[in-house]
Length: 153
Image (cartoon, rainbow, N blue to C red; front, side, top):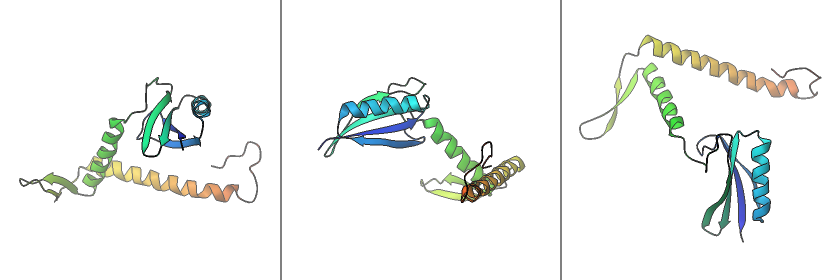
């Protein structure tokens, strides 16, 4: 049995936020839903329709985000910045990786620069506060609905 899966990719990147819009048994319906989802999200998401049958998987349609990409793709800049974040965090913790002459990766103790420690500490504090705030939202919205103009934050 054929199935048509519609996936939405934020800004058209396969390694950014993505979600399944729906699974359909009709390609015309899947394409219509991809177009509606992309438009309904204000152009922030590109949507791909894939034809699945058994082990076979084929992209048959793509509607772009506002960037106008021809198909969803991997954004290596996202990978680079995630890796840089890990490197900074490790440096702030006084650790650095290095490759030995026999191609092993080992840890080395280092003295981190003050600005790195301060930047990582600031981000950790921000992250902690955001997590606390997000945990409070269900408490503020449970039992009673919000009144007009009231913020959950």
